[in-house]
Image 1 (cartoon, helix red, strand yellow):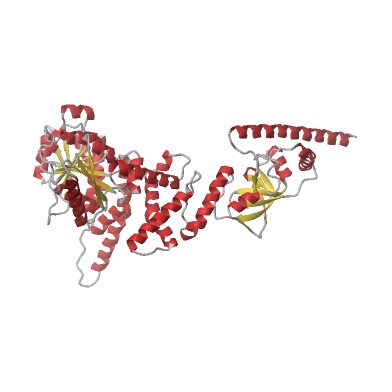
Image 2: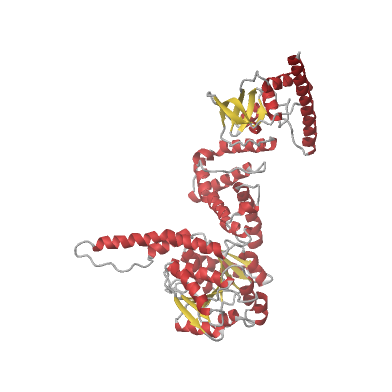
Length: 593
């Protein structure tokens, strides 16, 4: 009698649990409808067919996470996604399964299909339902793998299924998963995969135009991925853009940037590449000063081995009979080239700005800089052309300058406020070059003075233009004005970069007016020495600007590197500061960071 009483009590409790589960299922269905969702399980056959998945012949016994079971073969309408029962007719079966699972009898393993990380019930829906309500984390199951080209997570829903279906069709159409197995082109919105296919088709068309003949589809797919998509993806990763767009994928941002490109082409008159678009989307900042210095340090460490190898080779050569004794080895062309390759994306685009007063020769100077950095040259002519014929003639001269330097270049015009026009475009480049005659801060070019204080990108005020037979730009002796401040740290980075990539000997000047001038100067020296450079350190006294100009003349500096302000930027812009005095009087070009 006692056993019968326990059995009756257990059956009553199981029945109560079933009714509670039914109420929860009803509430879940209502809430899902309010959210525009479907609370039912996914249909295995629908998913398998849409993903073009193929069942395996093998079957393995394993413990499966209960939460990863999201669908069923035949009873997907009878349970919610949480495996709550949706029909009252299941009460007897459900109660019996619970009594077996909580009693001595036990139940056999369920049978499941697995697609990616998602599982579907072949046999054992009620066992899974009861296990979920009992709070079980795993369930014993015979699992049959089902192979799909589309990765499937355990959280897939009907919206995700639509995306997965489109992805499967995209993979069928392109074969990119086989041609480039590492490619991950998943998007988060329906309708985007046809756009990716269209991008490849357009790329195939232009490849055919350039080749003057048909291009096989598979070749177009791989060339698009390697030469178009991957550079943009690399820029997205370098700028850490995904962190600014939670829930989005790399392919999402690629398509966004492509759309953004068309908008900017109409606004700016340039056809920007994905790398420049990513630069602009990152709010104009590549890395903070500390991050840039860390990259430079790593690049130098990675290439230091080249010097060690050269030294060892020299020692081995000297050991041979009649060989000369090796001398000290300094960073050579191989080391400089390696550093530049490690920091190859530091300057991807150079903007050269002209208001017509500096002549076309400064475009040649900027083209030389762009060639040294393997960068694109974007020209901006401020003000409207007198006639369309004049505009075309200017564009033709610009194209000739770019061809002579071996760089890709585009020229556009901008009307209205000059400073605003430059700043709007500055986010999409890494360096701005402007021809700056002596005394530029006077009435002749007041906009250039405002630009020097307001731009967030390095600004190169070029004193001399590149002419035929002249030496390459930024190849002379650079001088850094260093006071230990934030802007001076940025200038220190650029000095180190120029010296490492061009084999230059830096000069660092600190004026004694700065607090602890000797210690400040030593700080800059230690950093440069740590990079393998041999700086000349000079401590000066007196007014800052005259001291800097005096040293620049003494060491015959071709370039002065300095921050855009020392104290308050707004105050210096109003009252004038060291920057004004130096760029007005120095014979050397000035790089303002």
